[in-house]
Amino acid sequence: MSDAPRMGTGAAETAKPVRLRDALRQARIEAADRTGVVVDLRDAEVARLEILNEALDPLFAQVPDQIDLFDRGISQGDTPRLWIDIVAHILMGRDKRMYRFVQDTRHGRIVLAESYDAAAIVNAVTDYVARRMIERERALVAMLPEQAEAKEKPRRRSLWTFAFGFIVGVVVLFGFALFAALRNP
Image (cartoon, rainbow, N blue to C red):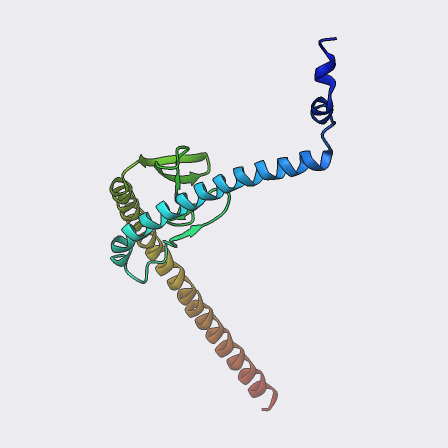
């Protein structure tokens, strides 16, 4: 009998089965709340990367225009990144406050620098840019002798081909003249 008062009208409303539509609505509200948090975190990441990008402006202003190794820009996706060149970029760490400067290689990703301080990352990027410019200079210097040899060889070959053709032509003309002279006595 003590259970009878609980089975009243109030108990009937609480015992009512939850409708799927109500459950879906609640799930959508929760997902929207989580998405809002994720979007806020992503916006914060992008904002921090933009601040770092502005801090890198003086460095890239010093890079000569004819050097086209670097293509800086922020890509927005699941993980926002500040690209330095085709293989190196900066992304935010798990806590969304630490900068991670990484380089993709054949053997995987290498972390070049990690810091909460933007100035430390600017210094790491400066060192990276200097190393890349030196690598470029070395590659260009190594290519110059090869290009010079490649250009000289066709000239020598063309000169010898021309000389051989000239000699063969003179011999043929001389032979034709001799043949014509012997035929008409």
